Length: 123
Image 1 (cartoon, one colour):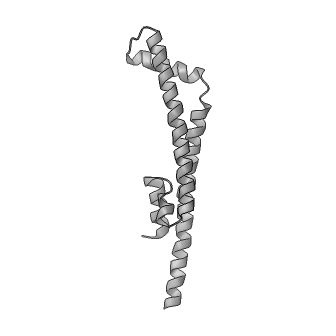
Image 2 (cartoon, rainbow, N blue to C red):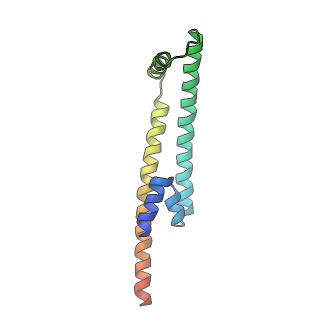
Image 3 (cartoon, rainbow, N blue to C red):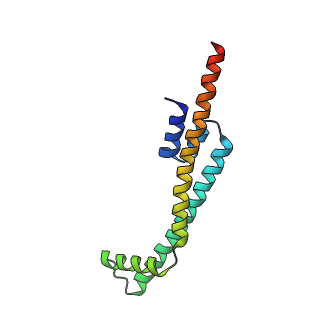
């Protein structure tokens, strides 16, 4: 299997940045992993705050917990609060993931080309 395909699959299916690590592009991998972790952290923190707000709302209304109450509270909390942070976090997460996969493929193609050219010189 070619380096480009391995690296793209590792970054796309395992975790963004793993393909860069496979290609020994450690600085690129670090930047990508940090960007992904920051995006994930933002999304998780905002989602946790939203979940806590939903729980507070349910408890303040008598504490009856059933699926309809949870669904109504979640819908109301999401539509009334400005959750642009979650949306931007998810969008950045998706973009970084795609960029990492494409970058791993491109870097792998370069490595494949270098290996082919070095084999031609040895023959």
